Image 1 (cartoon, rainbow, N blue to C red):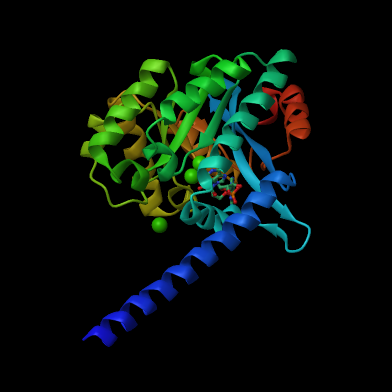
Image 2 (cartoon, helix red, strand yellow):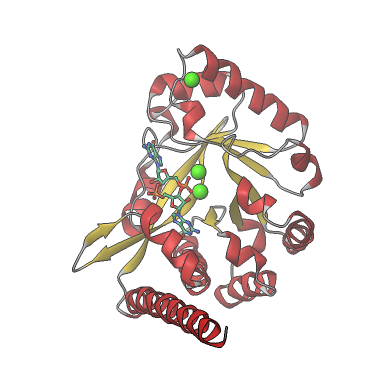
Length: 282
Ligand code: C2E
Ligand code: CA
Ligand code: CA
Ligand code: CA
């Protein structure tokens, strides 16, 4: 029994070592990525439909590795979440997005909003509201110009604690969006319970517009429901004029997608926003 116990102990120990080593490698790689400046942000404009106006941008993370080329966020963000480095990376994203917005504000874009994606680990850390408040204060961004994007799974991860934390953000003046709306399995009840301000309809429901009967039924229903709850509605992944027109006619507040613009680096995005004229789109 003693030998078996020791054996179990050793195996357990080996597993621990392996897990720790893997973590260290991944963390090391991602940490270097931050230090070497391999991460950068791109920005995708959001268009309000009536009246037509660029209201803000979503900040999206990019990793260009000299060794591996461009790695999509869908691949490296889960790793950053596992290793906990998403906390550091997420704070970098938040600060960088605010710094870019502040530069643009100095070019007269002073009503522009910035939206930042937030992962569950960030939301659950005890001092996240404080971190956001400090970054806004350091950079000099009024809180109402920041929107945090949270997925349904993030919101459901710890419903009680999440509700309190979201309320603290609303008290601070920060806007809150549900990202990828419609793709989760959560009930609609939380829409009423949580103090969110915006719904982002997932691209999956936009793709089939205007001809797909299901998508054409679902999207106006989401818009109507969101409006009855006093929420703003953004459609994601809008790629065609037909999709845009359908959404505009059904009262969708804003669109985002390649039809308006792909994500752009900060300089290109500023140029795009300054040159943009309503007549080009509607
Ligand atoms: P998301 O938040 O749903 O972001 C929208 C994604 O759709 C982006 O992909 C964007 O480039 C892409 N997109 C926008 N318009 C169109 C369109 O018209 N057609 C198509 N086919 N795609 C469009 P991206 O940049 O690869 O980001 C993927 C996901 O990675 C994001 O999905 C988000 O969940 C996550 N992500 C990106 N940046 C961050 C970040 O800073 N923090 C965290 N936690 N997650 C991030
Ligand atoms: Ca998003
Ligand atoms: Ca989304
Ligand atoms: Ca469909």
